[in-house]
Length: 294
Image (cartoon, rainbow, N blue to C red; front, side, top):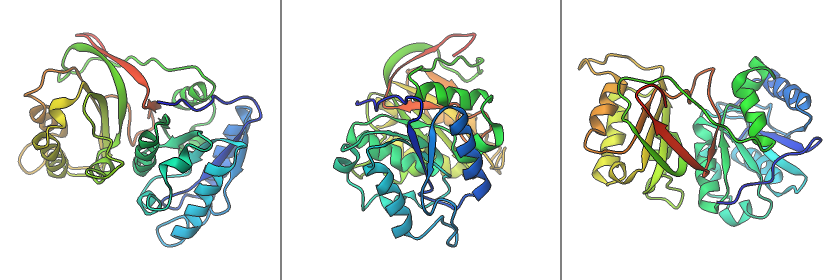
């Protein structure tokens, strides 16, 4: 996996909105934080726009993203927001184009589709909070600091409290993942990220328990869950719990992975929460789970 160059003071960071519309003040606030970090923000032409649910037409969003990808002076691309719409662009950007000027692509949620494209191209990317979180929480927020550290070459190490559903063990492997609904929509395509021998992390928002269970059944019946090296269960938010059957999200996930013996970490702080820790997609990672911490 190729690691894009780490950023130096003065480097340019494009701000692009490839999916849903984002409030202009979040774009401006993210730009301020990037400046405080010593970088030069370069907002794309349409990143503050709104066309229905999206930040622009498919052509406008595509042009913004392509310009940032092809510009050799742009060293990283910070996505404005997820939501929905990134999938519209996947038909028009090839993995070979991503290889011309490899750079960090930063985002999460719907941006998981871009991470999958980067992985297919053999380029690491950063699953992380985006413009809104930078604007709202500023330079001193621990997750924003962790993002800055990654961009400048300081690789992260995280420790989280133990969870009663954790499964003990240690494993080293390539870490991939993201929004479960988005990743499941890429199954069977060239951008399928749910591959054997990976440490997989998952998160989602506004998906009821039965829909997440349906996705996990797909992964179990196809052998994906069986062939993982490890699993990190992040935050699932904005859904009803318990459901009509008395199920909880983590209880259902625990039941779905019960046949397997790899290490599993529950309740990792990644997803649609304020404390969304950044993770390098495609990096070699170690997952160590003990009775006291993960």
